[in-house]
Image 1 (cartoon, helix red, strand yellow):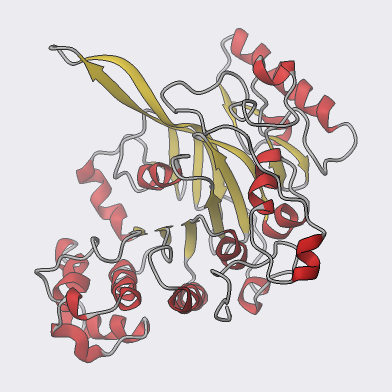
Image 2 (tube, one colour; image 1 turned 90 degrees about the vertical axis):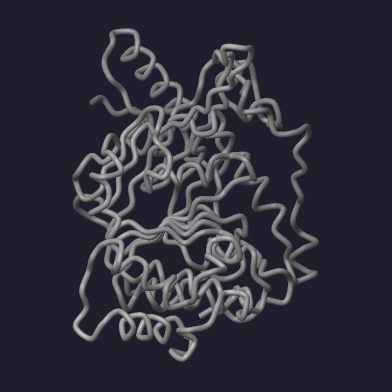
Length: 392
């Protein structure tokens, strides 16, 4: 369980393991993943002129790949504008991908129409970031939480009202709140209402987009604990999008770090926090406040120079090279592939930190194999593959 934080819910990435009993009891990953994302991208067109012709594109997400297994929690972190929420909305098919593939339970859902997606909505649900704007102020709690039953035309044994009251009780609300309106609740209670609505159809995968960022620190712990308890009770799978690295560390089994539309590192939670390889991940973790003054003295704060480049015109090759203190000429010419440098630990960097011997050569070899495959016209996916390259 999460204790109520005293410093903005932030803790040291090196303090303790952060493993809850629930996470320790989860099964090992294996077999076919519940969700697989391969080379997924979303480019928003920029138009100009009387005829509204496209003159450029905002590369919000540009070729991300990852997999999530049943019962697992994947944390997705990064600066504002890096493409986290856009990735989550594409998985939910609230946005149509520009390219790439989304596979859910072995079925390619990338090109499905909204009508074809409707039956899958039972298994794919989303917790939205803002508990104030995600609830209809003109509807009662009963109507809001009961909407999925009506939209999917699902009949319950004891009626929709009883099912909604059971859901409210499950998320820690009073069943008597059935006839109240959203404005009568606090922010934490509204988020619980949103979670109850998400759970109505017993989904298999939940995309949680900043589920606690709009809440007070004391309420954040309650909602995080609730999500973990529900995962164990209902065997849920989460993709959690967040900024707060301590929240991500507590709730996630694995963590993927995004920068300017690309995943730059993905690894098991403890491995990533203990020995981050990508310079950007190191910079993020160095910004996490440490309550202990003695530990704070021995840590070096990494301050990145410059601003985040625009996704309208991202830097060539490695997108982080304009702000990276380790950047060399190759970083400006060759994009580093996402390479597995340790078991389960992938990073996209020509000069990774905390990496085993020979990591730089392995990245160079994977990049050469990728470029060779691209030159011969073979389809290639960059992502979670041995050596960073997977031929399709």
